[in-house]
Length: 195
Image (tube, rainbow, N blue to C red; front, side, top):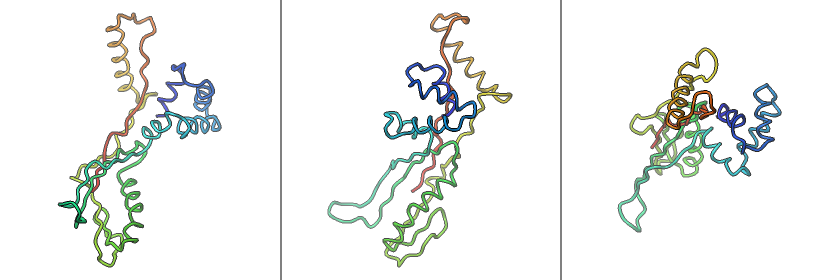
């Protein structure tokens, strides 16, 4: 997302001037400017702050929930599948550790035997159990980030050149004229699902 922000600073005139300037200084090693840009982009007062945080960090959503068989009766069993889109700088293990730590106080409060990813985390008084496991063996590590600069950036340069050439040809833009700007970016699209 940092590379995307730098591309916006270079090519998006609607980006606030102070933010553009801070991003340009940050790339030169100015830590104060980098912190300002980070605070501005991810701030809760920034209307796009939630989007930036979602693009840069791990997100989760409860996609499937089931429990009970009729109204007016508490379910004996309930389950949910929670989908995590793992940030590119994180891992399946980081998310599993976070999930395990987050649910432990709940298991302790309700005296539940808690098993997370095949290991007993706490043994309650057997009032019930809480089990967390990978759903369907489908967890994927975050996709590797393709370099956009330097000697290893040939795949990115090939893709960017193909996008520019296709766009310019479709729009009838000559190669010498300004065309589309290709901005690097990666989505945290690989998912880990736990039930």
